[in-house]
Length: 368
Image (cartoon, rainbow, N blue to C red; front, side, top):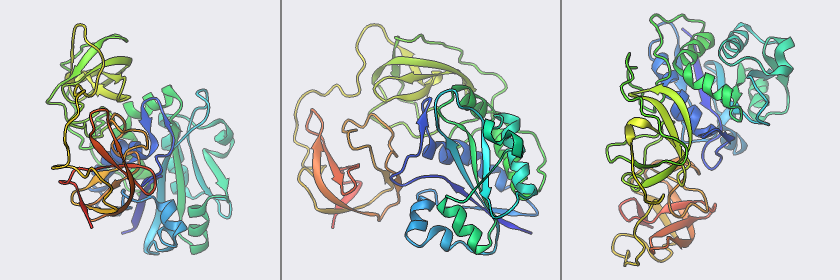
């Protein structure tokens, strides 16, 4: 039995690349990740461990951990990424150390990329393999004698690449697990079930509602997750937004997903309701109130998380963007606070030392 390690690229304060409604850090962890983890559990002759998804291995390696401390008991390390360039750039590839030749597992992984997305033009003559010596984790593993490859699945900046990848996400995950380990898995795949907790695909999509760009829609209170898998914040539910874009997904109970203004996130049709008139909004409370009972309204200096939570972008004071933009951290994590920002209604947000925003809610953070 061989043991392997899978790493999700970027993380912590580094979101990686972005495009077409996706963010690299979250796509690998919460869209692809659940499928990889599902198939890893089905292995009988091999095993796969997953690097702590709350961490960025590159950052950890810079600090003397990460690739430096990975156990030599691993037969291989596979790090998943998405590439970025102009919108016309397309395809994926597998990066290995130029000190070695690609092995049969590297080539098998490259074939999976080619099957579902195609190869990036520069590697078509080398069977989907790119040989490099300028990446930190790559070089550390090469020196330590541990087989490592970095997998660029597709260009996040190419709409067609992402459509192909999402449509076949379950099959991609299964075949990646097979290629990494060399072990064939039984059973068929489940298509593009694209949530952080994948459900069994429905044979019949019941909700075929298609809104048009410019339509006003309300996010229903029963909604739990965005189409890309991240949880929907409570303030989003019941709020009205304008449809910016539409895509066909055939996911869960919905044929379509819609990119909404203000939160810039994709929501399934089953979680929306069209409204007549009104304006796009995320917060209807325009008055001021005293939040001091439930929130820190003055700088607490240093806090620790009482519950796992994420950091928001430095300017996302209204909580309209990605809830894990600056990383997602477990309970007990300590942050130094350098100031406070407030919404128009006076709701406070803590400014961390890195500039990212953290909740000031006393149920989530405690002054230390």
